[in-house]
Image (cartoon, rainbow, N blue to C red; front, side, top):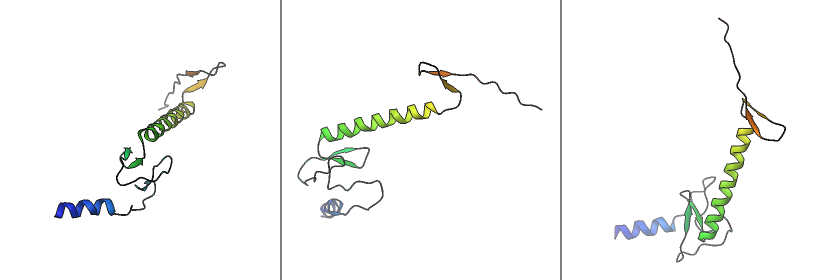
Length: 99
């Protein structure tokens, strides 16, 4: 009896309303309502999707964003310059400390 009460409590609970968390009643990508009797596809722990397609599309978008962020970080990291062909070149910088 206690297990069924706990189970129904888990599914009937309202979302905590924490920033960055998706409500479990709609797909995080297309906002399609999620039915209680249908499969829910989760990504990164607590992000619900209505289908494998929506989940894979979000995974693809995240990968693109991560690659762009890595390129941006690399572009502005110290010790690198851009050649005339637009390719990155590493530059060795020597520093001496005066005593």
